[in-house]
Image (cartoon, rainbow over all chains, first blue to last red; front, top):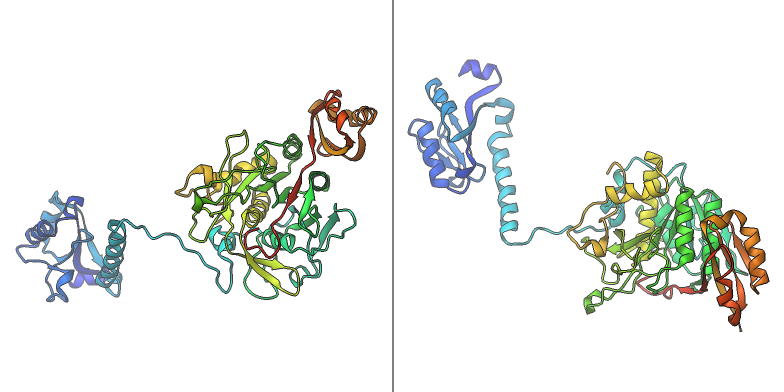
Length: 408
Length: 78
């Protein structure tokens, strides 16, 4: 065996048993015993074996044994074995048995989980560096930044003096009579933060997706949080005319019937290469048996409707389900429970929930896709739903699934 | 009673939006905004004249203006 060792081999062999030995330790033991010339293999449950004695890892269907040339030839012809391969030294040192033991323990753990009927559910949480939403959607791994893409957020405005937007070139317009774009309500600053907040905020973890996108802020909801169709549609018209590739609208009314005005606006936006993304709505109370319904304007066929999931990727209690009207479906889902983002000073950040919070995740990630692929409008919509991570939930609740960043 | 309305134009009428605006004004609409990028016009009109605006050539829909309302800022669900 000296020659073998010089070649990087241990002189031992890995014997890979056929799959039907996996659940039958006794039969596996007998097979290995026969292949190895009568020596009873030690299993990993029996502690450290005597040197030279074969070892069987019954959970893996693999044994490690020393074989004479005759035994090796017989083993290679043995139909009970899927494979016979020399054990390499670099595996033998530190890896071989120890590695297999670790692998066995992990496999046993997973097996116990499965047979207990409970596959471990996803469970995200904010870290020092990142919100759970940026982790779950793969934003942190994406090389894209949104550079070269304009995202219009139509909401209550923005705290223009917020430290996380200081020095940022933000294009603003107020459509609310008598009010400036300065956000006195908070909602707009929160959703703008999720869509386009900075890579390194002034304090705390990163919460913004498209940190190099051009941010456009249209104030269409007043300081009291209310807004009219006229102001919202004016904001959409402005965003399209100003070259926004993406419009994020965390707003809506609990109305089932599709509005022709919003459908017209969404359709013409797509035709000019602008994707409109809107909140499905918070009118569900699922825990009370009420799935709710997607409202105006997200129920327009030409406007992408966003539902909300929680940190375990379950649909949020409040997140509206698809309705039966044409266009009333939820198209995609995004993190919308316990979402940390910017808030007007002096608070600076706040954690809240809603399909309003899910929507700017999709808008920001749409900017990443638009930057990477150059897709616009309907093509960008297709890329978002195609790349979405499928969830084991009804499509009527989460559409194509959880929005995913490119490269994630 | 004047009420606020949102008027949507047909695709083939967007190019002649000014003509449609004139016809709507003739029909009693006090035009507030002409949103050319999306082919939508907003304004107010006496309730009794709303229906007739829908018959103006190039108009596909006349809808009463709605208001959206966010939950109060202190709400946990927004």
